Length: 467
Image (cartoon, rainbow, N blue to C red; front, side, top):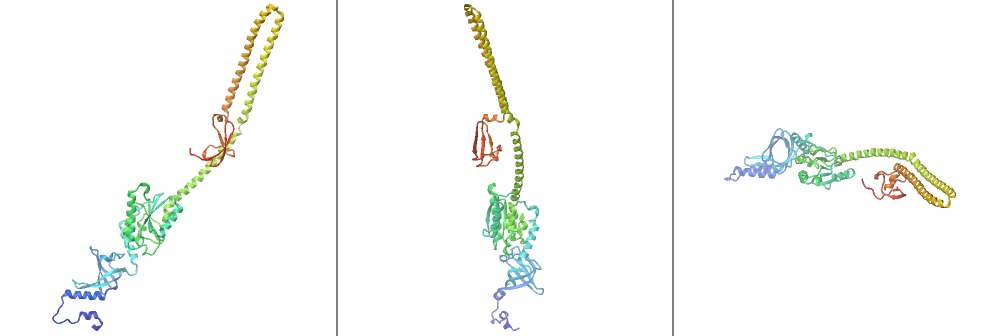
């Protein structure tokens, strides 16, 4: 091959001016400048050999195709962008520039981009991070905590403009209206998204550590809607996984769709297939409780209806008892007997007086006027005394019978269910005759009948107070 066809090599072997020689450093510097200008950006594919991660953070390795080697270096300022850790035997594709290490006169490839050949870099990085965290025990089931049965405040770490937040709010509004949602806005996509998500999780825990009990967040949902593997990568980053595991608040991971799995899903206390599914998990206990209350309420209602039916039958049986129909007849009979006794006492008194007067008249006609006057005066006194005694006896008998009647009436009144009405009590009934014993038997606006000792009242329920 003619040197004219290889300008770089021709320039290296051009004859120098006589009497002027270069130093090794000068020559190496010129070679470096020539190589860097000619090979400023190249793509090289090969197998990694002799990989070494220096304490300074730089990576050193060789690329080989089986017949030749090429030294390569990836500086710390570049290798943090590589999403996997290289290892010997891994086939990779590199982009970079050729330069020389002047002190040794060796040329090498300065790598600016590195990705595996065949399997994507994200898949390799995912498996490496997963294996490393699993070895540390971050995925152990013993570390996972159960969600509180009835969370009151839910924290959501996601984008304020994403579909995930809308889906979570929609589900909670439908199934758990008493649950309040605290949005912790963060970027969920891009190079700095992982750091922002981890910072948001730590911020929520710091807030709960210093707030009142009623203001604490019970459950934290961390996630976003669906997207490509590149879009979801922030939830695969190690910093996010460690922030979730260090959280004192139980965490639900809700990233992407049901088929998407991230490192956050493995380290979280619970994994939800979608953001909507995460909201369903949070509201599940409340929904079950409401259904249980509805079932218990139905059973209680049936028992109360049965009890009311039995009590209504008892009241109807009492209302048809003979005591309510016999009582007025017994009182009327006693009053009749008292009237009869008073009548007979009056007749006996009148007959006694009449007989006494007849005897007096008979004696008067047989006595002389002089002696008669004295006898008459004496008999009149006796007659007046007898009349007084008779009247007193008749009055005493009448009063005795009246007292006996009053005692009988009082005993009967004491046996009467209606006697309590005279002491200020009342009997409240619904329009169908049902007796009201409990305020919960009525409702506002219902009309009732109130029976008093004298008369009835027609009333309307204006309000109900608990006893």
